[in-house]
Image (cartoon, rainbow, N blue to C red; front, top):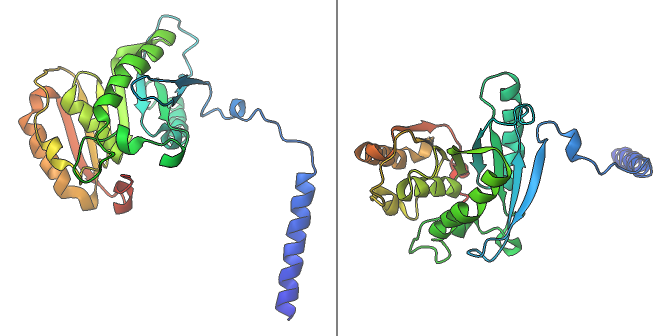
Length: 264
């Protein structure tokens, strides 16, 4: 009985505290300008005809962007940007402050939702075809959208260097990174595929899909420790087709097994 009374008193005090906080001065809606890791950032709503649905684009400019009006910058395109951008922007901010990495633009590609019902089509847009999922297989269309809609937007409105595009993707986002490397290897200067989910269509990624030759493209593939066999097969294939990518780095890292199962 005494324990219940003590618990009730604590709950009552918390309710009173929350009531007092709620009745204080109204919140200032100008949140984004106070987040130095994200600013300056700009929003664009992209409406590609090929998709028939919008993409939400957020562009973060480097600290020195306004100081040199003639300098072009590398651009890092972030798949699943609605989730990845808030995290990576913070790390990037400190790395730049410490002169650990060069300045670059961050471009987040976001669906504005975590689920298909509200517009998240990553399971279609980021994937090569497979017999196991009828809604997979839209990677070729999505890649075309990057070329005809996104790149012209970014490279016409900002001082983005077309010769230094970098693509980052995690899980099936990593699958799309590898899809672009196989089908249009010169589309990006650098690629990072983090724990790419290939378990439903691995055979596609073990085949040759382009005869293009490029000079300085980089590809980095990080695989979870439980996915090392897939990583090894990719590594062996990369050695065979190394003429298409001058620097291929594939490694195994202790990413949790669950991190590779966000495949829709």
